[in-house]
Image (cartoon, rainbow, N blue to C red; front, side, top):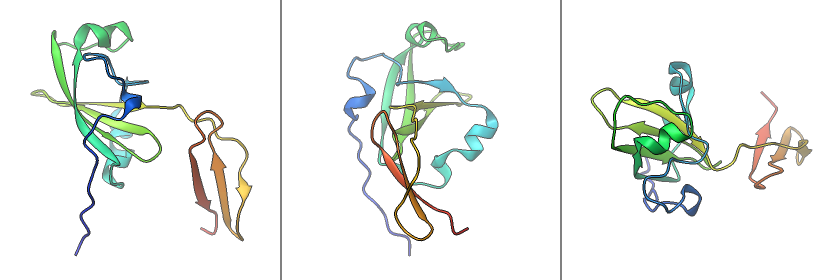
Length: 131
């Protein structure tokens, strides 16, 4: 039986507190990015609903065909990246990230285990190179 994990539904501070603002580093996703996104293989660490003004999206270079306030269902993952789905008649997918990671050199921490750490936000992940 699958374990059900509790997911945080509070807006993380990194998503901003101003109503109507876009998500950080928000950009449209291509169909191949949607298929390869973590929403199909990872449990989000937080999820929620964000209302964004279409004029604010256009201000950051995102073109939408609808005017007014748009509702986005978002999911954020452990590394600070996320996926937002425009809740409309034809759903559109967007990616966002609290940090555009720049990983430094990998550090060996085991026989086939390495750790890489982001030089900007200090997020780290372990990589098993044993194949």
